Amino acid sequence: MKKSLLCMAILVGFFSACSKPKYVDITDSKSYTSMGLDYHDIESVVQKSVQSLLDTPYVRNIKQPKVLVISDIVNDTMQVVDVEQLSRKITRDMRNSGKFKLSLALAGTGAKQDKMVDRIREATRDNDEYNQYSVIEKGRLQGAQLSLSGKIWQKNVKVGKKQRTDYFFLLTLLNLETGEVIWDDEANIIKVGSNSSVTW
Image (cartoon, rainbow, N blue to C red; front, side):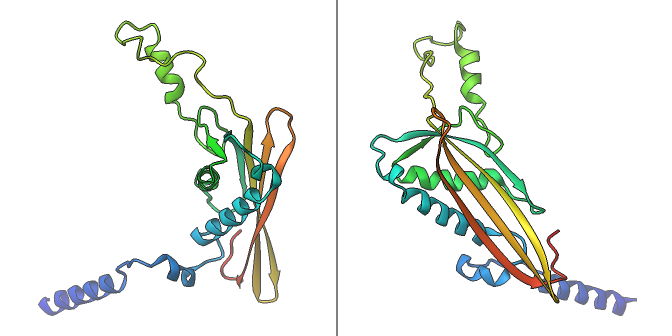
């Protein structure tokens, strides 16, 4: 009985040690890629798309930063994609260029509207518990001039004993005043793996 318990304890310890997770450096993590979308894919798309946007004559000619809102970003893949993470990475790089400001007073499915913008106004205006000189005045919200929207979709093709998965990222920047498309870009991620690594 004691030997059985000892053997069981040794086996549990052995398998626990084998399955212990470890940290992976970002530069080395590409060796652990899968057929799904991962950190490197998102970073690649963001870098390519933002650079494409910043290289346009429209953006180069911006003198005063434009206020931007995030509209709908549709995930039409079988992958769980955090579209807000994607949109915020893109808009963060856009803001860092000094050409854009992001407003979360309004947002589509690509981000979350900050509900405190409306809530603080409703709770404090004409409320005697608040010093009215410290309350935000009407007419202080900045209207947006631009809207960022997008769509992600995938196409799977079997090629012999392999599987090819194409991911498409379509991003569009719209002039809200005129409805005109200022910029759009399509970034692609293509992966090939075995048929056992199915992504649909």
